[in-house]
Length: 300
Ligand code: URA
Image 1: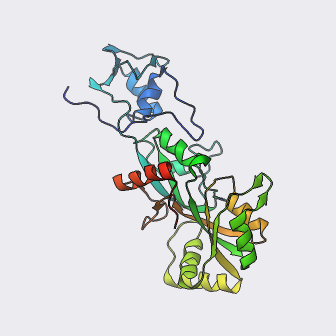
Image 2: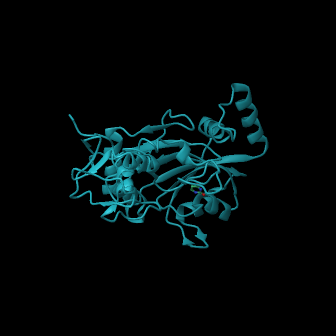
């Protein structure tokens, strides 16, 4: 019995659909959220007699524990509660739902991130099923809550492939605020991309639904098709996050969205992260996110 079971833990209250943590809590939930095993795996550990609370073996699945005062151990090794939370970004592909569980069995983001290793992971906000791009996950409820709270105005930058080419007047309307059925939108940044930037964005937005990397020939074909069909790319940077907001705003100014990608969340970008891949945030990126919460995120 040497060191502690030193695993990442869900440190704080839940968010994005997860109920606030109430103490005492069920022992298997505690184990899962401390990163020991999945909920089912934790139940197996308990029924196998490998879990103790304050030195006594607990096999009863309904047993409760208070992480603030009870000492839980697995195979004699103490389980830490409240150690470093985990925050990561996923490059979400199209055709995947932003939910941790779909009763209808459709593909979800939960299948793309390491929920077994970090059971308390939850998405920070959501992207539509057909939207690609940067989606943050965290076990840190405080961070998730803060980043989504409207008072912090953390910016999100989107690239939207739209039907037609918005005029300067339409862009100005997007900047000043558009009347949607749930009220006026806050001021936003809106620009029509041109030249190489537009071409790069069109290539990014035209990635096939199955996420397969497109070859040079295929990419050229898609770009040509986009030009032929008079599509263009708008960068829209929002400081609020209403449901389907980008699609509704662009539809309201007469340019329905054909494909949508989130390129930045606050100060963070995807860099070279491939579609379908995830990576943990670096210490610097976490500091930048905290900075965005404190001061509002700088946007490009
Ligand atoms: N706005 C939308 O319309 N869809 C998204 O997925 C994100 C923002």
